[in-house]
Structures are given as C-alpha cells and as structure tokens.
Image 1 (cartoon, each protein chain N blue to C red):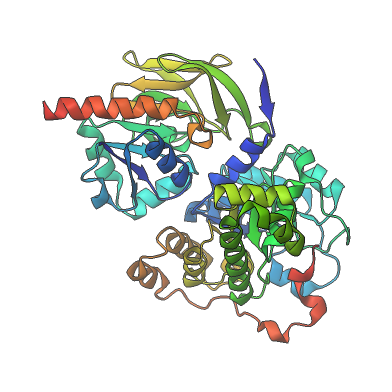
Image 2 (cartoon, each protein chain N blue to C red):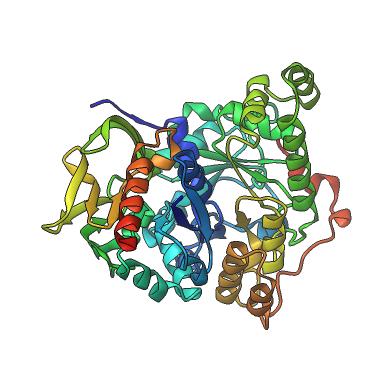
Length: 295
Length: 195
C-alpha cells in the first residue's frame, strides 16, 4: 500500500486539530506538565520565554535539545519548538528530534535577513507569524501549515496582536469578495503569491488555521482574540510570568473555549493575582520590536 | 431532517459541520450539556483528547454524555473522539467509556509519522482517503463489534451497534461516504425510536 507522510493535508490537518485551544510556552518538564494539566492543546518548548529573551538581550537561538527532549518525554500532547528565521539546520535538527511543529519565529534572532525557510521541503509542519495578508500569503507560499499573528511578544500588551488579526481578517474578507480579474493587482499590491489569493478567494477564508500570539496576558485577552476571529491562542510569557501559573493557565483555556460566555470569564478571572507586568509598545526602541523581523 | 450535534469544546468542529451539511442533515454545535437535548446523533470530533476530557469535566458534561449514550442514539468518534468513546484505553482510565473496544493513543508515532493512505472499508467502499494525524488505533474489540477497516493489520474503523469509531479524519477530505454511513445510522435509529 502506498502511504504518504508530510503531505499538505497531514500538516495543515494537524493544526486544524488544535483549533479552539491554547498553546503554552514552557521552559522545562515541570511547566509542561502544568500546561497539560490545565488543558493546553500543545506546548512550545523554549529556553526562555519572550519577556526573558528581551531582558537577557544578545542572540536568541533554538533551545538546547535537552530541554526539548525533556518536554517531549514529560507530556503526551504535541510539542512545538522554535527555530530562527531562515536557519535551515536548526529546523532540520528539530525535525530529526521528532518535534511535532516548528515555529519559524521572530522571537529568536533571525539567521537570514533575506530568506525564510522553504517549509514545503520538510516533513514536519511549520507555524509562522504575520502582520498582514501579504506576509501571511508569502509564508503559506513557502509552505507554512499554520499562521499566528506576530503581535509584540514578551510585552503582555495585546494591542499589536489586535492590530494584526484585524488587518489580516479585513484583507481576507476583501480578497474573498473580489472578482477574478481584480486578484492579480491585489497580489501585486500585497506582495502575495497569486495562487494563494486564488485559494482564499475560492474558499472564502485562509487555507490554514490562524492563531493569535504576541501579548496575550489575561483570560479576557485570549477571549478578545477569539472574538476577533482567531482560531486559537498562543500564550508565551503570560502564564509562567504571572503570580499563579496553574490558575492562570486554566482560566485562559476556559476563556478561549467559551469566549462569548462573559459570566464564565468573570468567574475564572476572579482573584487570579497579578498578571505579567507588561510594556507600553511606544516605549520600545525600534531595534527591540520583534514584529519587524521577517520579510 | 435529522439533527446531528458536534461536541464543540475544541478541535475540528467546523469540518464536521460542513460534512454533515454536505450529506443533507442538520448540524448543531454543542458547547453546553443542555444542547444535547434535541439531537438525533452526536459526533465527537478530532482534537486533543486530554484537553477535551478536561473541558468535559469542567463544564460538567460527562454525565449528560453518558445519558445520551444510554438512550441508544448513535455516536461517532474520530481520532480524539474514538479515545473518548472507548471502554478501555491501553494507557490510562477510559473517558465516556461506552464503546466495546480497547484503544491505544498516538500509536503510529509523532506528527512526522502522520500519513495518508487509501483504504478499502467494509459497507462503505474502496479507496477511501484516510488522513492519520498522531492517530490512535483499536487494539481489541468486543464480540459484537463489527470491524469495518484496517490499516497495516491494525483496526482503524469499527462499529459497535449505535457507536461508530474511527482512527483517521474523514472530515479533512471531500469524501463524505463515512459521514453518509453515520447519517444513515442516525436515520435508522430515529425511525426505530418513533416506531
């Protein structure tokens, strides 16, 4: 019998199964177990969460494979890991280790300032960040099987993620209603591959799942992103930089599932303690804006 | 027209709703236990089974799901849904625990081992495009269980009276034959309840 691994359907399908869920950043086995117990659909194994990457400065790279391995052994839910933009070997190493999804991430210091990975070449699926439909469509064109907003990672400030999800969805709605003869010019204006726009036009939505990321700090933030049309939520620094990670993690999961049940969100938000501190985006120096990485 | 619910706590809900509508039945998204009331059948979709189980408990739905099963109305579980239905799990305690099968989780490996294959299925047809994603499989079946499909010697589709369970994801393809089969089960069941 002929079987095929790493097909577009298998890679995109994996992300479809994560819909409505929360993916949490973790730095060790203990945190991974807390995330799984709270109901996370996957964990992202990292050396440092984004807010600590900001604080530490210097070059941020793929995590030590020992951390990734430790997390993979600790939980039965899928494990994701981050590779630097354009770093072919970091991505191949994570693939060889059997990681379930790779995030080609602007949170790490880019390895290539001109080219992203050719993600269609890999058996493992990839998720990439986007701020607008041009960027989203270029990543899909390179083979990304899942998208997320870039937001502004490690700030605990939702404003950039809101900007990005609104922008992408408004542009998708526009393309979905265009006539065939308008699409090529739109592709040129957006810097988007024509065939990806054709697919969006035919489907009426993005061909891959689009999660929210980059600044989710509270259950209400997670629910807001779902309200704005995200398929699910990544929470980076928000959980393990809060006062009470277990309770925070559970509350964010429940708020994501039932994002229109405001009584429930009120209930799970009660007495949660102090969320991560957060940063005003206008106070960030231009070189500290992670969302401007990637092209 | 029969009304089929899709448990909408997490996972591939939208795809199942589309497939139900494609075969001419009414699809209902189910987030609360009260919404199980007027359904003729229920689908437990693919997703993360550990997450779904936690949400079932947190929203106090477990008893309502078991009561639904006890009415004899058809239930169809795909992937994570298959795990939720099984009476026995190789590693761990069962969840809803109503279908007379034993299931092993993640039994084909991690995501890089996920695959597609064409399967010949009893009572459904040949060359069905089966998409396996970190899929479970059925290790053992009870004596009244009808095995409908195998891949590489492993049971991947089976029926136990009112219950239909599947390792792979028919909802990720355009092929609606398995959904058609399930909707037929729901219609038969509704007819016998009315009679």
